[in-house]
Length: 144
Image 1 (spheres, one colour):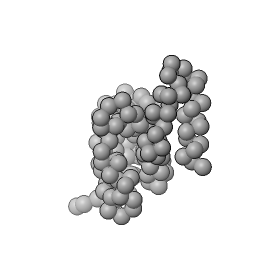
Image 2: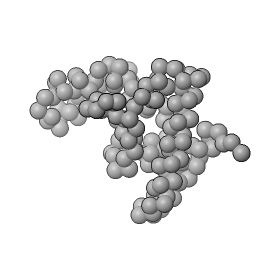
Image 3: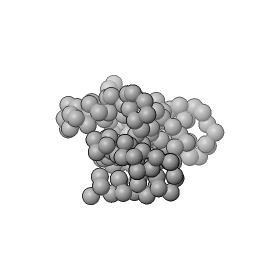
Image 4: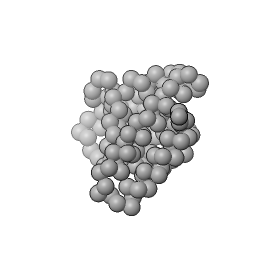
């Protein structure tokens, strides 16, 4: 039996809730990761075949890192090639499918608008306070 994207999204949320009940359960974390990666692949294929090909191709070319300790749903960095997208499935997976897709596309927009380079340019000393303000401004420019 072949399952659809809705099935995997529901499974992901079910496994996330299992992790919330017992944060030390490694098996539950592995199920979250495996299910998220399957769901992510399905999102890429849908983007390429039915929605916006450019976003789908971007998603295919990221080095995807799953980080359960990340404080954000998703983020991008250009300090490696291919560019890296870091995702916390425990946060991102609780969103609706349209919200998940929007967040992934939002992160792509940071690359398209050259925000990682601009962040380095305007904050060469990596001052965390400046970094937070820059990130808010960059997010506002995308979400306008």
